[in-house]
Image (cartoon, rainbow over all chains, first blue to last red; front, side):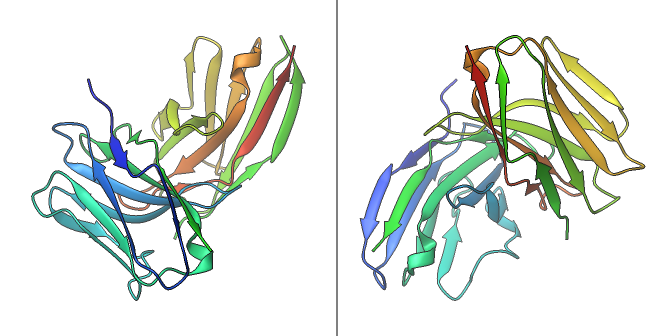
Length: 113
Length: 111
């Protein structure tokens, strides 16, 4: 079974620039999560999708972050404009349904200079 | 919302010894408690989870205990091996969309 795929693996940008991350969940997984993991901290949930609908985005900084999952499969997370404090690893995870094991992707390490 | 505290932040043990990591949570309605292991530069992977209708769960050298009254749960690793060295995260959730992670414990197993 193929795992969760993410790209790019690394990204370096200057503050105020825009960046987008892509996630392809495990086939058949209806639930998709985006997490932000700052160095030395646990993952923080940004947004959760159930198929192509948003279940929770209460911790997503909506003034600069946006995410979509148009066809209920792949998802993109965008930051515009980026700030220094956005430097983190962005993890995508999926599960076949809520309360089941979440499978994480390799993450995208973002550095904002 | 849920608040999860995890301690210790770092733990060093000799190979073969046991390691215990503890977490407390604030929301008494939380009913799902997974533990993840994250090796350096790699993705978090679920190692064990427990639901609120169970007090203890064991899988080979790993066990998790849950005390709902005190609102804490613990990870126990017995007969530790160098490959157990990693960062371990606990998490708690009441609903599917409010999973909260602890800050992590860096476990080092010395050969």
